[in-house]
Length: 479
Ligand code: GLU
Image 1 (spheres, protein in one colour):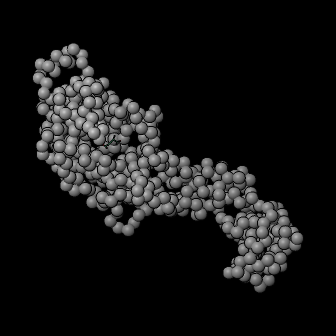
Image 2 (cartoon, protein in one colour; image 1 turned 135 degrees about the vertical axis):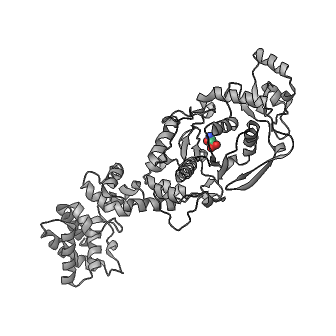
Image 3 (tube, rainbow, N blue to C red; image 1 turned 90 degrees about the horizontal axis):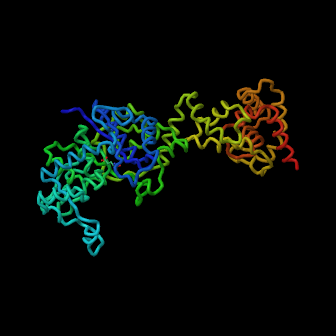
């Protein structure tokens, strides 16, 4: 068997979206699993759809996500150039060869003539008009400088069949395939031509791409066959949906990899999650690093049914990665998000981050978890009521001065000391520990739900602020 070579062939039309990244990931995983090569090819022949800067986004996204290629425009390789617009001469040479082989022909029809072929439904289908031209006529027209395209010569009868590793046996009647343009009048190839030439010349053994190409693959096979080239193995991937009806796509404004990073998802979680969009691992393990994904990946696990992007699950995975992350790494990734909080700069940043580390799934949740520190003020005293913990307004009135007194005496203002003091107090007052902690927390935060317990928060606030807040709440209760 020849060495496995897969490729990712994005068109530079904007951000790299989740579907594209999944295609890249599967190509990467399959080649790495089999000790093969993974190639990046930029398909920029559709100049109308070209968006400035998108090639750089493709490079940076792939590097950042770890889906790194062995060959590509910016890393080189033996099969370049890896940008289609730099391969014009190659396409011309092969288009002419295909004409000689009978798989294609010159077409000089004017746009007006083509327009005239429109049927009642508004569809244009080329009528093989120029297939009848003699060699001499063609040579004459070219010599006269008449503009032309090269079209594929699709048989009128029969069907093109092939085996797709995911979708099984596929067959398309040739009568349903038109003689599409392979080389445009400006000398640029269409995708339909360039993908065949490049995949062959670049030694691609496995073509992994979206299902939108499932039914056009027979026309590519006609060309492989005409040239006498071996067809690649085909693996078409099911679409990714945002819900039962709608595809996840950049056209619908759905998120790109960069958007997910900006929202604070852990990148390893994004890659891990998109690996599961269409592929089911054999065992039950779902959380996998890139090297575990390589180890476990198999084409057999790719299913046919559309995969629905489940943001809840993606966030959950991100949260799992955050829990496991070592603290230094967490600090470096979380700090830009911490800076968005009102609490930033007012408290010890390490302590703030320590408070939220196990409590967020994506980094952008950080401000909402700690903003409460800066939102203290008058509150509804009914918040003290908690039947389960046996806390009430009366108990709060009774114990808050004692809590304040106990804490005032503490010199070394640390969570553990504060906690011990409150536990001691609960014992001496014979009041449930949970009730004391509940009341203390409400009194210093004015919030029913907070990240962190009473003493953790008190440590962050510092002694003076904690005592001031306790006094504020005592006064509020006595109003
Ligand atoms: N340039 C094509 C696209 O972006 C690539 C399809 C393929 O992988 O062959 O859809």
